[in-house]
Length: 80
Image (cartoon, rainbow, N blue to C red; front, side):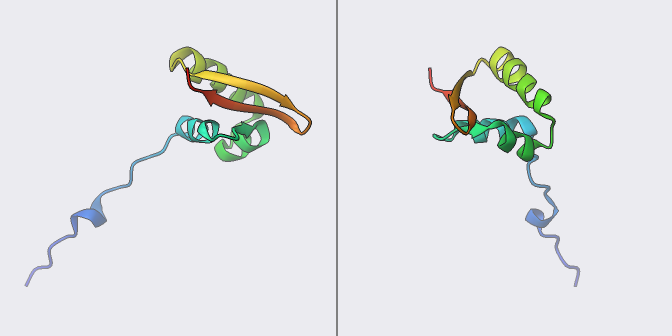
């Protein structure tokens, strides 16, 4: 008797992009600092800042707030 393939076992999981990771981290109420964003994406700091201003702000139209705290700058997406 032939074994039927399990359709869920052959499907590949949806790929999560690094931009999606940034959006998830920035959507948290506490936001995220630059070292957290760098660690999560594996990008260099200037690449993360470029993604914040270029991809998220300019292309996706998201409002990114930047708050200076004693421990460093915190970024978050603000609801418009």
